[in-house]
Image 1: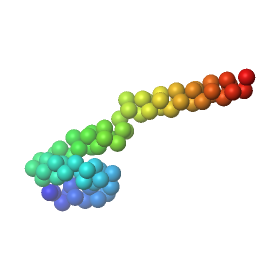
Image 2: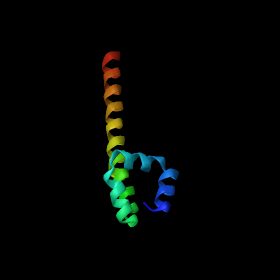
Image 3: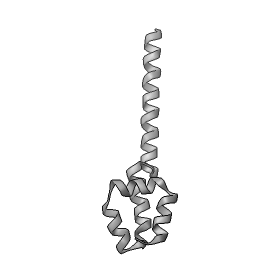
Length: 77
């Protein structure tokens, strides 16, 4: 693997952990170091950091808060 890629992974432990969980990326990066951008996108999907995933997570949390508020209101009555 290219030394620049190794240094980059050491500086970004989250990406290094993703590569450890998906060892096929070692092979991809050894053969074509320009696939680093693709690796970043896949890691974002894996960790749930894409915009649609964040919106979905926020929506789920908001729905749960509403449910608790309704439950508290019904217990109060």
